[in-house]
Image (cartoon, rainbow, N blue to C red; front, side, top):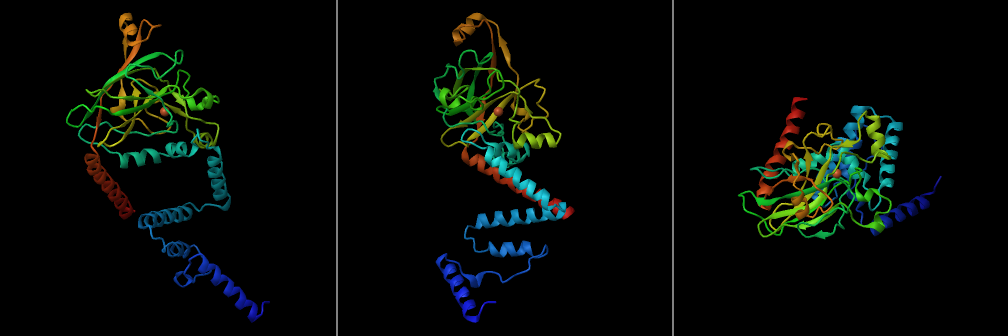
Length: 345
Ligand SMILES: [Fe+2]
């Protein structure tokens, strides 16, 4: 048993540590014996010194939902540890070129939900969809008409269209980042030699004075998202498949306009209705045509082809201000729908 002098020494040491760390012990709760009835409120009190009001608000909601989740599911200690180990392995799978957490967010529908609330559109603007885990910053810049894919990577596809504002005016100088799978259904960063071989089947194009863009690419194909780690385990356990319908990713930026992250899907793809990451929107489903005039193939730079596929699509961007108005409405509606659900329950 400690003596009175020892106790004083311990208290003094604790107070010194608190002072050094800038902690005001007088403002913290004096609660002990946490129970399922008191723990939630106590965490909120402990977090109450947070000076970032937005962070405090988000954390309060997260704690409430997490604690309610534990109570509603009667989760066992083994199940909770298993969840923590799952998240640990998810983090350990990530590398500078592989993002398992984004993929996890995607298959849980969270990426799609966040996108829908943050990037809603109106008035005919092009809809957004999930970024996915395969975007990289190191895409090369190409001139219009050049190819983002090396020879032999897949079936030839010509892509063209315009980038416009909501009034139909062309947007010149818009930057289009585009990336796609090769004909084997793999992105360049899924290959082990990516660091040495560099970017492939991806590129950056700038719209012309008239808002036009056009480039050579290959026909992307349906593909399985990486199933060799935690996301694959989760999908298997949930009785789900790993496939995404074929698509061409496009990310558009232009000064004064809301950044648009989207993708184009292809009519008839068998996975359109069960996309593993919930990215398909009907307005983004397009139909390719086939150009069979060999002369056109030659003029477009497909020197070894007598025909090629053609994908034509115009993109319509909202200004930053237009997007802000639509986003505010969308977020308020979503919040109201949750309150309504709670009231009904
Ligand atoms: Fe993709």
